[in-house]
Length: 351
Image (cartoon, rainbow, N blue to C red):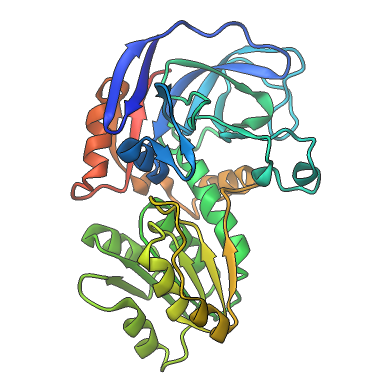
């Protein structure tokens, strides 16, 4: 079967590998349909690493994905604890926790120290024609959702988790730094919660335009303004109640802290390429900020599916480009260069 492997920085190759064996108890075999390209994938593409995880040998990319069940292991139940049948379309949570440790037993599987993660070395991801996954990580996709939106349920889950941490209140003020797919979805969710002022910042014009379309009252290009000054001017020097950093977590972390009010809440979603958190202690201390680092997501797929199926969030609007798996290297290069109009790239593997 065809696979797309990362051999090193900016070195993606299409090759073949053996088809997987039959699924064991609690597992299912999927024919992979579509795979999304995420910002963390771009980190790996650029450097061969994300955070402190290094790839020391070629591995298969792809952690946002959906597929069709072609074989079912004994006792396989999906994420809703329902029996799985052949032919079901499944969106897949890429994080596989142990379900036995302290964090898992306290309801925080995203913090499991024993987890594995599809598409993060050493665990191969979904850019291959077939794949065995844990049944419990599978969530059936309703007919209303297209194959292309399946990978975006993971992206929406990240946004939901960040919003959960933000504790946004009605008529509060919010700033979102970064209007990539996660930042745009955070913007959309925040706008649905009745905030009074919603700032979204990015350096790409089409992202700023989409943020305005999706509910930002102040969608601003950082090339045209100082984000902190813009927030302070619009809030009469008070600052916002909540700031969510959803960019590359470099100088934007400091900006987010500076645009917060005293006693405000800072939620960090972005992953810094250099694995460093840069924030002046005096600003955070003087303002008495609450700082939350958002780790992936937990228990979000059912809610993400409900939002997408109800039409309250149209995930199709984020799918800007589609490529066949054979063009994976081209897709990554184009996304890395942030070609005009790119929101979400979807790679089609097959059905």
